[in-house]
Length: 109
Image 1: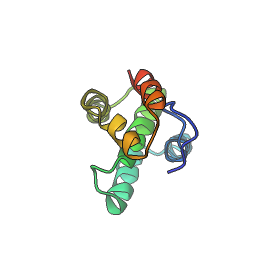
Image 2: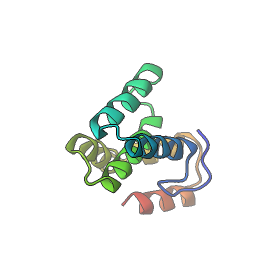
Image 3: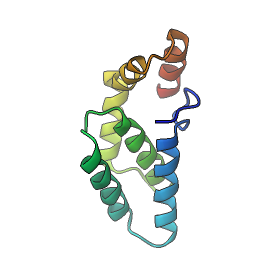
């Protein structure tokens, strides 16, 4: 996972998913189909507890919001990631500095 900052949108994974979602939406594909296809693809490659899913959910959530409203299941996933602190723990495992972790937490909040 390429990460160039502590902002929510500052990873390669986030950018790729968001861009893909919006391109497919612009082509007329239904939101639910786009979300399902992206999630299915990631479930094939990763365990749902893998931190990469944080960016998947963040990007899908932003894309859905930009397209008219975030779905309840994605909103719930994002809320849980933030409330449980799992994204901060993921970044800690990636050896982010304490100052970076504080900034990440601020951005998540």
